[in-house]
Image (cartoon, protein in one colour):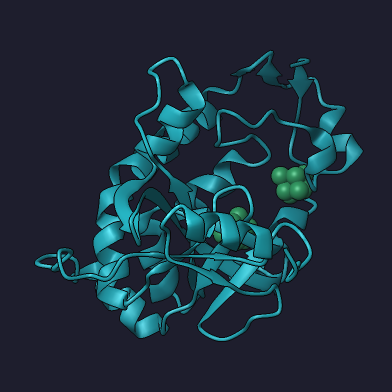
Length: 258
Ligand code: SF4
Ligand code: SF4
């Protein structure tokens, strides 16, 4: 990857119309401030353990919990996300962050990437050209050159991995049991804010995972549903226009014919 320099020019674009991945504690605080938090769920068929040299698969493994979809072993990744349209509820009238000292990791990391397998590309970021014209090093090859950002990325990854199994209990407690197929889309769950806040604060002890039904994999591709069903998974055809407390975001247009 080429070297990149960067200085934030405080344009505020990254504080608008976004979905921010949050840690458990950040999501709790976000809800306590009356923000909106949703859960993004994706399922990965997991027939055998990956080779230790497969770093990407090992990364997904650490971020997920093992479970079943019908007769198919899967691992499920759950991401807590803050969601807002227009300005972030924490952005004040002067375009300043009103929770600057306690803003989420992801706000401190942007525009760097948390996922070690995604290369930072200015073209995919909201920052204007003048921000990239800086002389301050951000990336030197694949390494984040800014010490503070590097620490926040490391902490964010550690939290993500540490919280993976707790999220299984969180989903069980909230009756959440559907996920998109990894790489194709996400199931998006928006439980009532008070229930989610309560569950995040206190509720995941003594959750009976044994009696929780297996996960359903959602897709808007009929061919995917056919393949999953023949592999023994519990799968359900959905569409990008689904709505309600649980809905679907697919990366491709709906295809209801095989
Ligand atoms: S929390 Fe602050 S830094 Fe993060 S998106 Fe909102 S206003 Fe921007
Ligand atoms: S979009 Fe980039 S330059 Fe603009 S405020 Fe966010 S980090 Fe700074």
